[in-house]
Image 1 (cartoon, helix red, strand yellow):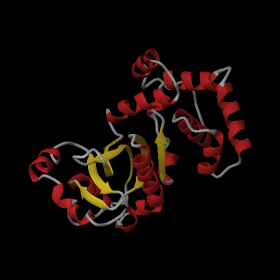
Image 2 (cartoon, rainbow, N blue to C red):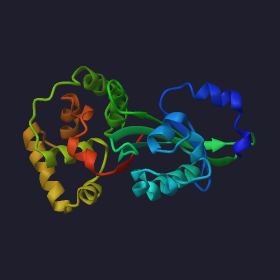
Image 3 (cartoon, rainbow, N blue to C red):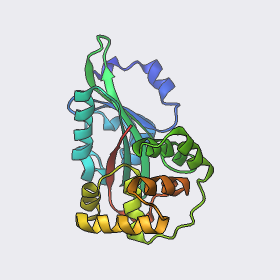
Image 4 (cartoon, one colour):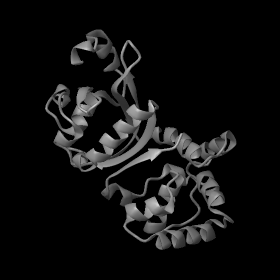
Amino acid sequence: MKDSLDPTLLHMFNQLPGCWGCKDKDSVFVYANHEYGKIIGVEHHLDCVGRTDFDMPCPTIECAANFRDQDNQVILSEKRMRVLDIHPYSDGNWRAHLFTKMPWRNEENDVVGTIFSGIELKDTAILEVGHWICRAAGLNDQHQKSFSLDLHRQKVQLNTRESEVLFLLLYGKKPQYIAKVLNVSVKTVENYVIKLREKFNANSKNELIDLALDLGFGSHIPESMLTSQLSIILKE
């Protein structure tokens, strides 16, 4: 399958920004571009070929099982997936990426694996993820416009745990998931949601999400979240 990758097309695609590559049905890398090879820690990006996420010289191996499950879900559903990834990489730095994973089809339109592409969430890149946060929360275009206009307005003061709970709520995660990620009880998460509603003067969880997005909290990844690896599937 590696031989089926056209060198001319690869040269063109490798000039695009961000990380990208493709894997076969067993989640074995068939290709990865230079930027992906650099952050994952291989000497040459083609050293990724023939490996799985379990074999990479990078702390992301902690989430390798999640990556494999996501690949399988994309292959079985034949639908694309958006994923928020927060990990330490081979250079020891933590990074947040927005990845898109989609079915890789051959000339007969059969799914033969997955294609992935990702951008690091920094500078203006965070604006793109704002769109997906709004979609995850079920908000309309007017709220997306408001989110962009009010990106830097943060009037509500939150402690570390409140910021973490709100961050995951904005990505459409339920209390059971949040409790597992933060290693607390579901009841504790529900209590934090109540406190957040009080701070935002919101009458419901949906209104809390609405207000938080309007105030720009969707653009902020809590620093405390950059210490625990996450790979979160986003709703479209």
